[in-house]
Length: 510
Image (cartoon, rainbow, N blue to C red):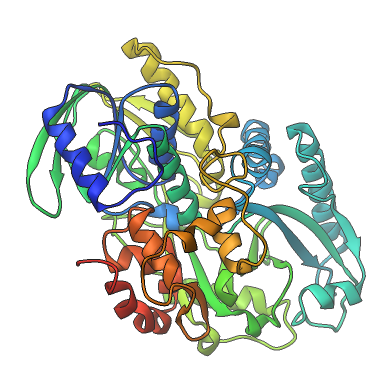
C-alpha cells in the first residue's frame, strides 16, 4: 500500500504493518527513527525505493530531541583544523535554511560580551573566528540576507539584546549569526512525514532484532506480534545504540546537558548569550532564547561510559558547571532555584581511543558488518542529510538497487513553502503556530475536529488544543508522552507537563 499524503497516524501504521506482513520484500529497512534514520528514509523514498523505517520508541525519542537546537555552521571545527567537516556543516546549514526547511531553521544572533576579564588575545581570537565564519557562509553560498555578517556592537546594544549581562567593564560585544531550529524533534517529524509523503512506511513502536544484510525481525511493541521482513539492504541508524545491532561497533558516547529557564530569568533576551569557558579555547556555553518563553543553557561534553539509558540524566556537577560559567557574564547570578528543567543527550561519537570527548572528531563513518548490515555512526545533526546520502549511496552501489540519484538537496520538507502539501498560511494565524508549522499552520486549525481547537492547552502555554490533535492525526503521535515530550516540548518543564498530560490523553487511547 503506497500513501501520497504526509499524514502519519495509528490507522496508517496498522495498514502499513499489515501490508508489510503480506507483501513482497522491500528495498531498504532503516532501523532508527531519529534524524539520521528519518533522513535515510526520505532519501530512499525520494529515489523511488520501497523503504520501511522502524523505531522501538517514538520519532526523535533518543539523541535527536536532546540537542542544542542549533544547525551549526562548523566554525568550531574550522578552528581545530578540520576544514572538511566545517565546510560540509556550512553547506548543509545553507541547504536547510534556504531550500528544504526555511520554516524550521532561522538565523540566531550569537552575542559574545566583551567584559573586563576577557583578555585582548581572546577577544582577537573570537573576532577572527567570527570573520572565518563569515567566509564559511560565503563559501557555502548562503546569502547575508539569510545569515547576516558578524560585527562589533556597542555596550548599549549588548544590554538591549541581553539585558542581564554585567555592566561593569562591559566594552561592547561581538555579534555573529548561526542557524537555530525551532525544535530538533519537529525537524525529525517533518523529515519523517516528508518521507511518508514519498511513500515510505514510518513505523514507530516497532522493534528490530536479528538483523542481517537481507532480513530483520520486527516486533510490534503494542501487540507483541513479530514478523520477519526481507530487504535488499538493512541500514542501522540507531545512534548511541548502534552496537545493539552490530556488537563489533565501537562508540564513545559523550553527554551534553542543558538547563531550561524562564526567559525572564535572562531579561527576555533577543540573542544567544555566548560565554567563553574559562581556560578553554573555542568552547563556550550558550543561553539561547527558545519557544514557549524559555531559555536553554548548554552545553557540557562529558564522558558517558557504561550502559546506554533510554533517557540520560544530567549530573549535579554539570548543572553547577553551566551555572558557574554563565554567571561569569551576568550582573546578577543565577542559581539552582532558577532552573525550571534540565535534559541531557548522548553524542554517538566514534571511539578513537583517547583524548577528551570534546576533542573527538564529529565525522561520521559507514561500516558494513560481517552479516551485511550497513551502519552509519558518529556525525552531527547538521549533517544528517549528507550522512543519509552517504550511507544510501553505498547501499545502492553494493546491493545494485535500481534507484534514482539523490534528490534531498532540493527537496522541501512538509511545512516549507515549496512543498506541494504546504499552502501559504493566511494572515492572522498565531505567530507561535506559524513558527512551529510554517506553511502548514493553517491546516492545523482546518483539520481540527476537537472542542475549542483554538484554545491553549493550559494557561500561559502557547500551544493550542488543535496542535495536540494534529500531533495524533498527522504527526504520528500514539501516546500522550509523544505529544507533550516530542511533538511539543512542554514536557521539558515537569510542572507544565503535569498540567497538560490529561489534555493530551483526550486525544490518544493509551
